[in-house]
Image 1 (cartoon, rainbow, N blue to C red):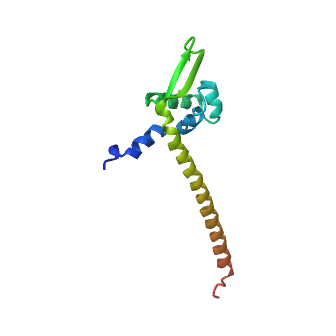
Image 2: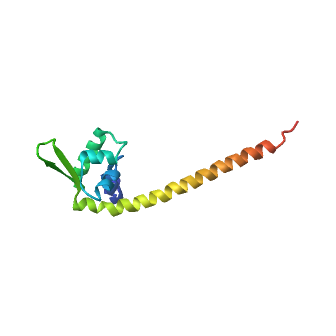
Image 3: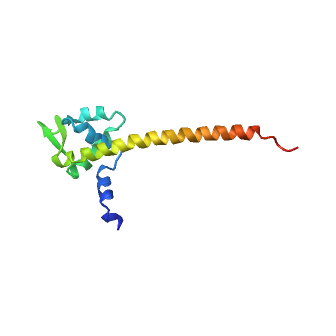
Length: 128
């Protein structure tokens, strides 16, 4: 199979981006204005958040509704199509938590192993 034909790659491409999964997560409960979204993503810059919102809008995952003048009030919400991503991201989040725990356990074991190796090495007498 070619990379361009891989359905997992096609799905990953839609949510690929530092803030896209968090944007979808923030919008799953209710529509939010831009400022509310930024508060839900405190580490995201305005520029990157705007770019990723536009990409999600182009993919049909979210919709942008402007009220009044162009800059007065803009609200973002998940589309029906975008809501189909929520269970996928929930499963990915569950897997991610398990993976982080596993890495943490393995990392702790590796540190313990290195410490015991160092202790074993320091107990070995060197030949004179």
